[in-house]
Image (cartoon, rainbow, N blue to C red):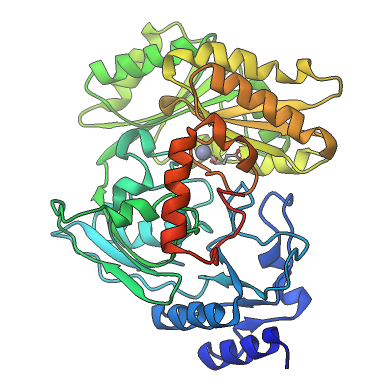
Length: 459
Ligand code: 2HG
Ligand code: ZN
């Protein structure tokens, strides 16, 4: 019996029959990432139901010297949740999927929090909160597939970040299995609790390299009473910030502030989504606001006074207006002849106009056709640079050019999607040697054998 056969036998004794997948076709969906850029191989995909099962799987993998790739909804965009293509060492490889860990505890309406298993989706958590008059402060276009464990592991931003902060800020407690199989449990709804290091905060954004997150205790927020969504066509990026400032001055709370371009809206329209405004302009913004009183009238007043080219508004949730923004990822992916090069970056707000101009022109710097589409969370200075039709042998060059522009503008090469495997060669643009060495030391302390997500963040 090989090491891998013995491990499979142990895994089958841990997890209910049928949830240790070894068949090529059954495993396929777990081995390719959402972008289609990263495809790998594994000896098994294992789908545990409980934390105890996860702990037993990790222990079995430790005994067998196996490596583990941790996967939630597999909606990540940087190749962080699938193993690499070729086995460069003979160690057995296992993908651990949290797809069956979907329990959601009763919502604590007084403490405004909820405990969930790692595989619960963002949409399921928000629905549970909504039934109690509360809301989950993390929201993103992939809400029906993205999971609790995934958004914590990547410290996801999403469309509500401008209002509530990133996912790390919503984590009150965490349960996670360490590389030696022990279970770390920090589980308290206390908002003041300073006993040593912030380990839940450390696991947020660790991209599955330090531990397997099995449960999360999330903060919840009050649902905004009334919301209005507006889409405006504007000539300059600065006009968007004027709109946001004026709305805040008039007593409105900004719940989301997004940016799109003509080229992006065209693709989304080709994909079957109605154009929100007829007029054409260099930029479009989608802004959602909340408030009390006749907020629609206030928003109409702000749009009338502002120098916008065109604008529409609707009471929230205004899913059709949101579709023009949220369908970008799907529309772009269908329209590119090669896997899309997805570069999620941020720059300081004051540098946005210049950076957007430079990023939009990035294709002019290289001697082959490539279509850049820019969109993102303008209020956070976060631009999703999507490069379509890039031949594989030019990906590195174009990525380097984009990151060069970002670094020169004082920005970050990863605003919200993480490093994964896609951005490993460029981490030095965002972190100093000392910083990276401290991160490596933490990795070595918590996962000395490099069992979890090898190749992610550190290469
Ligand atoms: C979004 O904001 C996601 O919709 C995906 O972060 C961004 O597809 C992308 O580049
Ligand atoms: Zn985003």
